[in-house]
Amino acid sequence: MGGSSTSSSQNHTLGTRPVAPPRPGTEVLPVKFPFERPSFLELTPEELHRSADHIHRPVLTPPKRLLWRTGYAEVINSGKSQNNEDQACCEIVNVERRTSNSHRNSLSSTDDEEVVCNTYTPENKEKDRICFHYWGLFDGHAGPGAAIMASKLLHLQICEQLRDIIDILQNTSMPPPICLSSELKTQAVQQVEDAPTEEDRVLTNDPTCRFHQEKQVSHQSLIVGAIENAFKQMDEHIERERSKYSVLGGCCAMAVVCLLGKLYVANAGDSRAIIICNGKIIPMSREFTPETERQRIQFVGFLKPELLGNEFTYLEFPRRIQYKELGRRMLFRDHTMTGWAYKTIEENDLKFPLIYGEGKKARVMATIGVTRGLGDHDLKVYGSNIHIKPFLSCFPEVRVYDLMQHEHCPDDVMVLGTDGLWDVTNNKEVADVVVNVLSNYEPDNPKRFTMVAQELVLRSRGALKERGWRLANEKLGSGDDISVFVIPLGGGTYT
Image (tube, rainbow, N blue to C red; front, side, top):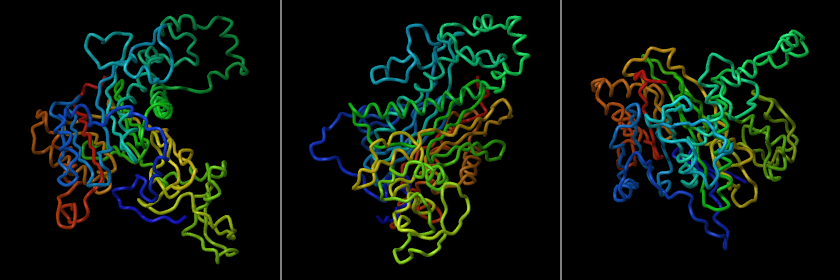
């Protein structure tokens, strides 16, 4: 079970092993959502067709201003897939308190459009509602289905998770209650009913009755938990839809939620977010790859060896083990180790490593180079019935940036990009582009952040020359889909 390397433009697609084709006679299911580019690009059918030009690779930008004057630009890949498999979303989402007629569930296939999470309008700004600003990037692989579905629904899943805690979030002076005893009671009513009696006060002096006071839960952690649960619900939603619709592939997912003066940056995959503030670079995410998650993935193989299909070993070696090396002592490491040690090679060690390759060429089961995301429920090792999904995770890492704790100037921004950007452009180079482009525009110019996004995409794509797409330094440009948001932080309206 050998594996060959893949190009950098395919660093999280299924590059080493091809995807198994549908079995003959398999029912062809309709797609959940038709292919399209982000709605805010407002492409006509003719423009949509032109955007798929793999030869000229035109850079697309929105014709109208996005919220917060956000800049956005994208470009299709140089031919690795028929469609641009990146997707994006930029919304203001209105969250209504749950009522007696509403149910507490993730979105079903019948309520995608009816869920009470609407685009914000001024008349909806009431005490029983909150709104949040939302940006999402979804980097698809092995088909656009999961990325399109996530771009349509993930913000609604986040909205659904927030509906139970509107009252709690609006009253930050009180700690979150341990139990939500009634979904219909307001926070004020609940506080009165939960007010301690004299008997309660006596009991709380007894150490055996104070277990409920041991953990301090912040309002921020409730929002983080809502986002984490939303990713899980989104992944389960994609899995459910597979019985009725064709939802191809999977996607890396990055979502940014601005709520109550804080930015919540959730990342599941290898997209990246950085903040450039007063000339400093603040990383707001980390990539999840077979190398960065080696121990977690190996631990799954250790706990459930049946998932390895008798073809893989969860142990890692510096290289493939040969049969003639049986009985020799060689370097290895398992899920408990960050360093290396020696072990005597056994026959089981001759199997293909669960994680193989290095850097951008590292793969799980010689198939996929990203370890967190949404979808991939049908992904198998080529030519086998070994499922890869059990080794992947849909849960994001959520980092929080408190906007109120920083003084922002008009040139401070957050940059979100799919890996097509970061494969060829590092954090400092991105920051330099931001500074240089913004210096050419007045602070009140509404297009200045779009121009930054466009320049970042152009720079990373490069120019088409005899030897392919090349950067200014003649190194290879990105042949991947590239999508970039540039979010200004100097607006001051964060609540």
